[in-house]
Image (cartoon, rainbow, N blue to C red; front, side, top):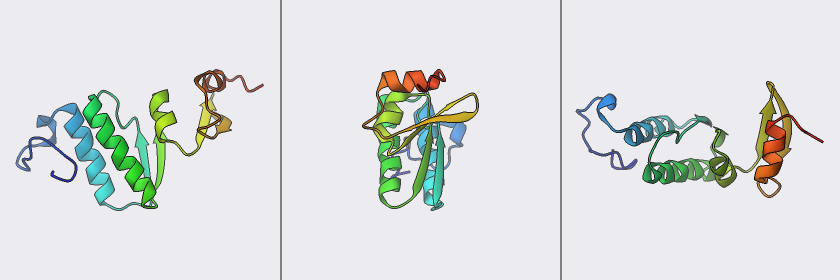
Length: 118
């Protein structure tokens, strides 16, 4: 509870009693503490407050920096641009583009998301 800044710090409460942001921090903490080699984070910050977003982002970056592979699946372009080392764009169930964060502008990503590759 302390490490992942879950509030209130009560292990007696069931997870559904916590706010959305704290529920997300519980899930992220639970998965990271298992020590996986690969973490798949699908929409990790959807619907949570700014403080929880920043905290979750820091945890994902720290996991990556410690050698864990992190696959981020997100519809939030700012989240993708802020956290990604490599960006793959899918359209129609297929990968249509691969970009580095430096190459990935909102316009270029938007075109790829629409299936426009030329």
